[in-house]
Image 1 (tube, chains in turn yellow, purple):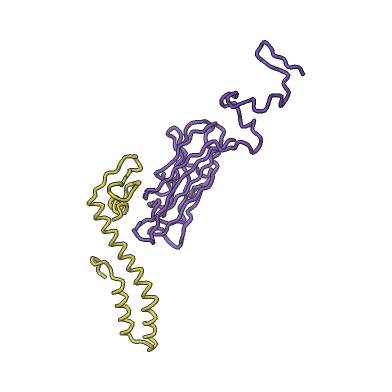
Image 2: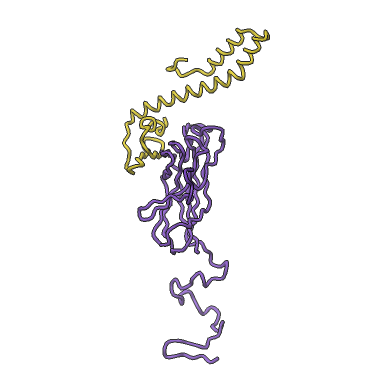
Length: 108
Length: 209
């Protein structure tokens, strides 16, 4: 996990400089005091998981929107002109949703 | 012209070039006796010293709105003379974590604990800095995998105080809205080839006036 993301999500109001990658080399400094900033690892980990879920949801929404525009919308308009069926359009929408699923914890 | 050796310790009457070639060695000169004014144009060089810091650690830095935040690396330089010019160069690789079109960089000059960010002398309510962010793909907010950089080349720090006190130069960066600047990494820093890492640095050269 990215500790930078987790710590910043857990302490959104803190002005921090975070250096390093892992718990072994991580240096977190309070910019206002210049002193080391003590953070709760469990809190940061939980926050990172939430951020990751939010990012996954946002990514899936972006990909679905793009695919709807490129693949499903033409079928819908074709169905309106009698050149395709509503069922074909609905099947394409379902296929796109299956291709880019939302995170398990999120209701579509 | 006769050569005269006076009892006062002086010798007169030696014509220019009158000493045998090679008879004067560097040991015959007092330390520091050769000044810049005694050098012909283009001889001897003007770069008095060069100091540099290279910084590789992937880092994120909080930025309050409209406030220049220090990057976590700097260089110290003690001027050789009070009149020499400092040429400040730095490069910051990273991602703005917000709107790249609002991002600016400058540097802080700290002397004896007093920090001064070098900015335009007049900017009203505008956002001040020295250089703007150069983005690799400026199509939207810059908060995931799109790095860019601040590049400042040989900025003449002509406003430094005319003394020989040690100066600490630190790159700074700001944005209009509060944000987190990702330094030497992208914002999300995913371990994949769509997410970049880099190296930042600052170099200061002291040039004789």
